[in-house]
Length: 346
Image (cartoon, rainbow, N blue to C red; front, side, top):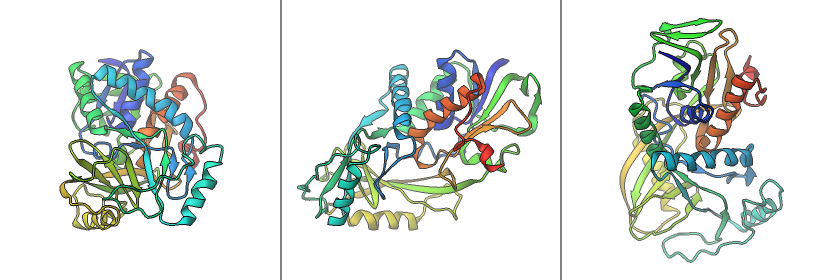
């Protein structure tokens, strides 16, 4: 088999890069062994504002401009619902936070995303004495639905290999790479935390950050917006809500923990005062980087090898943006932004 690209990983990074290839009529195959769950268990929130400090997410406008049309196209092609648009309500803990919000509303990069009106809390089952600030142009991508539907499409076209990828079987040359019986011009590694086992890129400073989420059922809550106050409370359907997330760097297993559950429920109890039940708990390892920027670029010696990784907790926004940057770098020699180029760690 001969293709333009071999892609390793079918999470948010891999899917985003595949979409660049499809848009430009490039051929490819994908390998994924389902060992990495960070995309599948992601809350999927896209939000251009850092709500702890009321600052702008890096390149947020460009990220949204790239990401949202991609998800809209995927909805049509895969015939699934992916993008659930809803505001984010940031609970204020004090009058000082209200004042900081007003100051942030005047900043050029934040003005279009922050409503200048304080929303008073009238919900009987939510504790919010000082009300909320509303973040606009936000929503949730159903990442698990996306990954499942994308795999199904790839399988139907015989482009997907659900198996381990054996790095020892890669042969490199001036004209491309050979993996078993597959010849390709390029190979892109987008395997998330699995990168730490990749002999070509394991030197990169990828840090595992375990995240756990709860799914609760709360029939009396009935909100249609995301609530942020220590934790995110994200509405799903049928009175179900995501509660998340935790951040743990000492544990790299996919096992759920009682400690994370207790932490999330303690924070939830300060936010809502209606009855609820926990119906599920999930865990995954986020691929994060110390400088909070993705890992994108070309191997120093093997010129047909590339990496697309380190999306962290904002993968639904940043994935399509950096995938386009990598595609343009490979195919059009467009320089990568120095903030995401892996050369910064050489």
